[in-house]
Image (cartoon, rainbow, N blue to C red):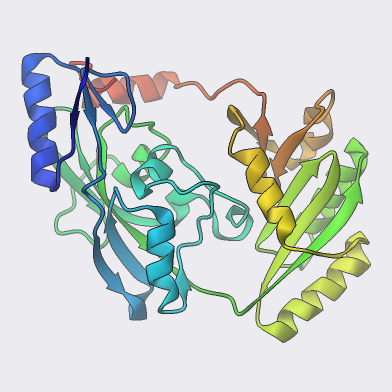
Length: 305
């Protein structure tokens, strides 16, 4: 049976990995699979919140909902809204994001700095809001989507955004693949500035507008002129989350491929943008040859399972 380790400090986590590496034992982070399961449950502190600078530094075990509650008291948010309530470490390791990625980007776009523990127990930091940087890899971007196979994400610093005072949702009915592609392209190349644009296929394109009341009202009116459609309840974003959460995998593609990607698809969630993401029964992303080389360099003994 695997043992479970719950370090309360970065140094304790480093000691766990160093000992496992020395003894030839495997470690899995936050899941089964290794001789040792390393949990970040006790690494759940907010280390620094500079409200004036719109930055925050946290430990990897804090849950997203708990962090958002704290930031909301200052009228701020971390503009990453994946479904469920992942830890910050899981969010980064899984490259998890929600509808607002259309406007604010993926985790790598909001990440300022990171502290990680490598497989042999080495603690390394890179980026902003950290004590010491290291030359070489951009560790923050490198660890986004790494699935816990390159090392433990222990701390992370993020860029924040003000919470918008007004939010309104616009919906367009669409059941034709070609029309879905046309609407997505029209939205992307328009002067509209939505926070989110999700296609719940088949049936509806949902667009979220956020900001000041007057600006949002103008955006909704322009959306009606450009796309047709109607204003709708924000409930549709919960429906999008219900489709995204159980999806076994996602694939990425250019907007010009949307109609072809929807061919033969009975139901899916598509997150629109310059790069589109389709959540559904698609082949899982595989490690590239370069990723495998980096992994071999960072974990030559194969400690991380």
